[in-house]
Image (cartoon, rainbow, N blue to C red; front, side, top):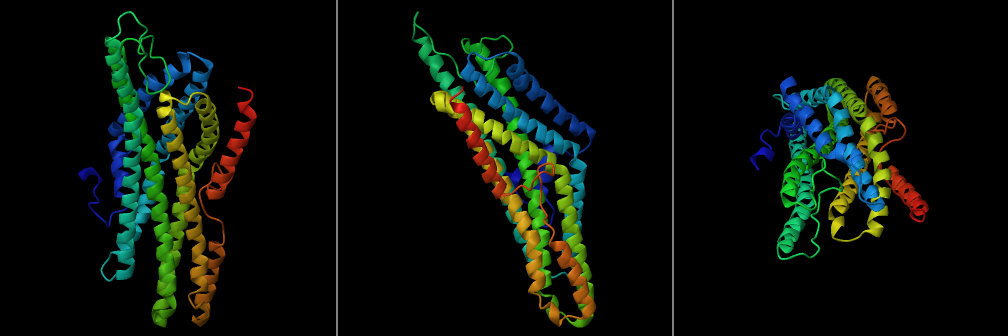
Length: 390
């Protein structure tokens, strides 16, 4: 687990950058070729068979399409991020510049301790989410393999009687190979498919870890602003103006980070919400008619998608709340005791802080808990209409 250790608490987003380098999104063109190969591998092993090789029944078509949507959900979002990855590097540079300034000789010890503690929180949350997805992957991939091994052992004791079919990780055919009846072909599928699903899960986790790191780091900047504003009236008059200039610069940096996050993720968030509706409906339609031993894999995908969407909406809500918290910090900083020119400058910060800041879904709406609730209600309404017609 040394890979997941926080080696430098003063570094900006160390785990996120490490994961980006590991999976080919950082470190030059040669490293990026690995990422491109990963996407190609998932396309060949998962996407093409599910799109073109057919399904065995109508119920399985519903399951297969929901799994295909989930796979495309992962690949589209990470490709969008890959296109904007250099903008994320710009965000990291902004955060790291703020850290260097705070940790320079003579820096405020309170602000240093806040950064160190919050960096540990960011690292712990990012590591926890990545390991959670890897845990889901183990359950997702091993469950059908274990079932298939049990079926293989049972088949050996049957002479001339009907033999059980082996379980695939997703509902799909595999290039004409009899993966459900021939254990050798099944073993080949399990190895190739397992590698594809591992890389898919890693990219799923990587995308969310990047969002966690970017949003949490931006939230930290807003909290540093609030702390500095709360102490502004306590400073000697000859230091107030210089401190206010630093606060304004920090606020500009925080808003710039939100702008970069918006550019990086707004299309991906639109994909997130659209896929949620489609995948939830299709998976529930399948699960209500086929709730048996075969539902473990689709149920894991359903739970993972729901938890991810709720987590992201909650995180975006917190980001918006922290941006608005600057207003309260200005009001509470005893501004009326400050010089007139300082009050005037604070009024500009106050005016700017009243704008709603956050991450949108392709600029249609802000991502927040309220939106998650509306999407859930809409999905259920559509499901109620469809369940009696399919």
